[in-house]
Image (cartoon, rainbow, N blue to C red; front, top):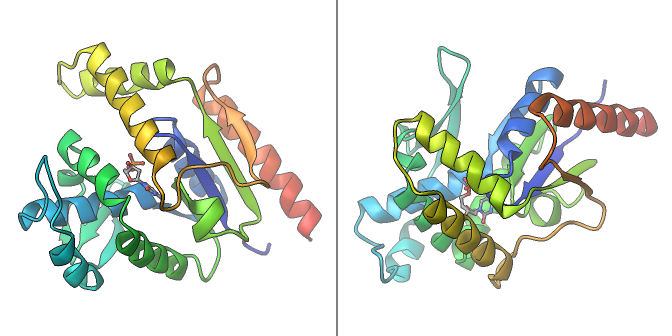
Length: 230
Ligand code: DC
């Protein structure tokens, strides 16, 4: 069957990667976590001392941006891991500090331009499920199947809170909720490619759906779309 590209966009902690990984596994497609790429750039800027709580040294980051090579490899447990210039950074990019930095570097036009270029290259042969904020609008505007996922900030904060607890962290729910809202605000109000639903994306509010229910919904839509395209 002819492969297509699948674009999944939505706010942070909406379950995008869960549905994207589920689809990729069921369909034998490649999953690409575009957020991990912004996180890798954030880590790169932090490691080089080009970003602190107050400011970003944009000139230095801009000068080195084309030297940042991000790739993904599957580990022995079948999980995908992010590599930055050949180094496995999967664990390093999952901290709150790097996430907050990612939300800041992702507002810079030259960062987006380079990452979008790398993402489009990865989707050239089709058969990709990519999740992020601008996949259906900018990266793959021609994707055959686009999903825009939503869930209330409270539901998303609770999911993040539970994940952090499971990892042995001890966050306060109020702090997690405030962080979710702050990132929502930044993602939707930045000038460069703000988060918005593509006109032809199918919207799914998964606040009250199980993981399995949302995957079934997506597989049904996928089947309809690919049958129409044949
Ligand atoms: O999905 P995530 O939390 O891993 O994303 C990290 C940050 O990167 C988040 O603040 C939004 C930003 N991002 C983006 O601007 N465009 C994308 N395609 C993916 C993520």
